Length: 44
Image (tube, rainbow, N blue to C red; front, side, top):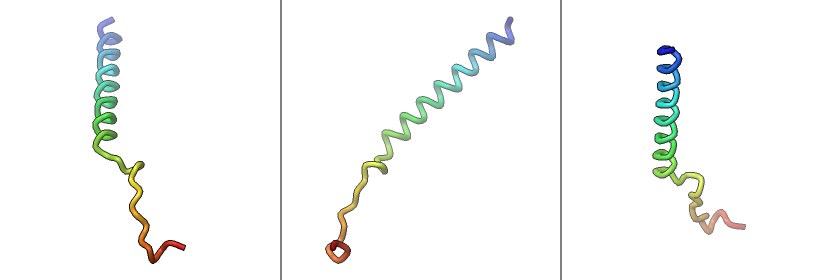
Protein backbone atom coordinates (compact mmCIF):
# COMPACT_ATOMS: atom_id res chain seq x y z
CA UNK A 1 0.00 0.00 0.00
CA UNK A 2 2.75 2.44 0.96
CA UNK A 3 4.75 1.64 -2.18
CA UNK A 4 1.76 2.39 -4.42
CA UNK A 5 1.04 5.65 -2.61
CA UNK A 6 4.66 6.80 -2.79
CA UNK A 7 4.75 5.98 -6.51
CA UNK A 8 1.66 8.09 -7.11
CA UNK A 9 3.08 10.99 -5.10
CA UNK A 10 6.40 10.88 -6.96
CA UNK A 11 4.67 10.68 -10.34
CA UNK A 12 2.48 13.66 -9.47
CA UNK A 13 5.48 15.63 -8.28
CA UNK A 14 7.39 14.84 -11.49
CA UNK A 15 4.41 15.95 -13.58
CA UNK A 16 4.06 19.22 -11.68
CA UNK A 17 7.78 20.00 -11.91
CA UNK A 18 7.77 19.29 -15.66
CA UNK A 19 4.64 21.39 -16.16
CA UNK A 20 6.07 24.36 -14.26
CA UNK A 21 9.37 24.10 -16.16
CA UNK A 22 7.60 24.10 -19.52
CA UNK A 23 5.52 27.14 -18.57
CA UNK A 24 8.66 28.96 -17.44
CA UNK A 25 10.53 28.09 -20.64
CA UNK A 26 7.61 29.06 -22.87
CA UNK A 27 7.23 32.44 -21.21
CA UNK A 28 10.94 33.23 -21.63
CA UNK A 29 11.22 32.27 -25.29
CA UNK A 30 9.26 33.94 -28.06
CA UNK A 31 11.21 32.21 -30.84
CA UNK A 32 8.10 31.01 -32.64
CA UNK A 33 6.74 34.56 -32.82
CA UNK A 34 10.04 36.14 -33.89
CA UNK A 35 10.02 37.39 -37.47
CA UNK A 36 13.00 39.59 -38.29
CA UNK A 37 12.73 42.37 -40.84
CA UNK A 38 13.79 41.20 -44.30
CA UNK A 39 16.58 43.36 -45.76
CA UNK A 40 15.69 45.36 -48.86
CA UNK A 41 18.41 43.59 -50.85
CA UNK A 42 16.65 40.23 -50.32
CA UNK A 43 13.16 41.41 -51.20
CA UNK A 44 11.92 40.74 -54.71
